[in-house]
Image (tube, rainbow, N blue to C red; front, side, top):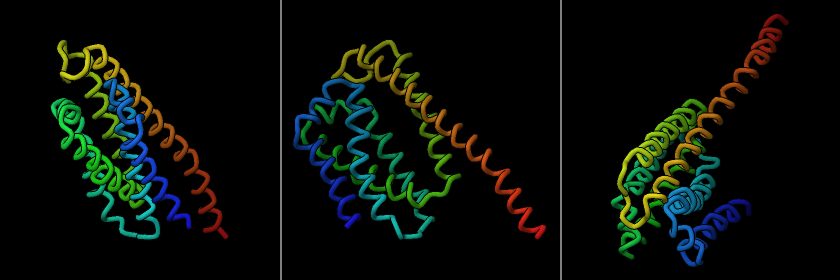
Length: 195
């Protein structure tokens, strides 16, 4: 029953973006397009992918799945394809399907199968990519996306930097919490050995 709810929830989110005014509303500004529409579309696929991965112990699939998600997101973050997705309905449909099926599903699957080291590497890599893209959006004096204004580009650049900082803070927080838990578990293990 839970499996059905997760898959239905992910599909419902994808349908909401595709059929309601929410999708076009998010696409009206560059920052909400990339930091709103993209993540929601990917999340719909990721919920389904994570549910499909539950109970399936195939950790070797985690790295290829996360790599596929990363490459798909990097492709659709290129300004040329952002513009094309808004100008051409077939490119728009391809982008929507790709974000759900080639980024979201593999992300959900890979994240569920990945261990803590691979997850940490993925988050650190994502933070570095976002920081570089944010810096680029702020440093370039002309518009990268012809569909949007230069002020939209600046907002997206600031948004990328904020998300990158948030990912780094989350990663450092998780590492700090993990290191605080480890000494206690080592002490307990030493006590059991002493007995």
